[in-house]
Amino acid sequence: FRAFAKDASQVAKALADEVQALCQPLSSLAVRPGKGSLPLQGSFLRLEGEDLRLSALKASEDGQSLVVRLYNLAGQAREAGLRFALPVESACLSDNCERPGAPLPLQEDAVAVRLEPKALCTLLVRLHP
Image (cartoon, rainbow, N blue to C red; front, side):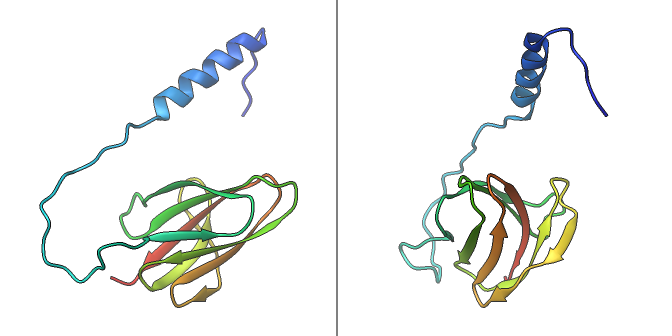
């Protein structure tokens, strides 16, 4: 599928319109403190590796997994480590439509993945409840 335009400004406007249509505002919810087992402070997710950025973290459309999107800023491949506050049940590569791909190696609370230079990578991660 290809789209052709008479000039670059038409393409830029169409792209900007599409980006704006996909943007969603952040939402938050204030709740009262309750009794729980979590520590007073901590990190739900820690990204390890040079020149890597977390570009998205959301619930999958089916509600069964987390969708994690990473970006490698470097001109060389990089190894990423994702450490979660909860044990990881499973993790796999995914496409942008959240279709599962190749499984990824796990260590109790961590997932490892290799990112190619200047590449985006989407993962599906299931945590133990």
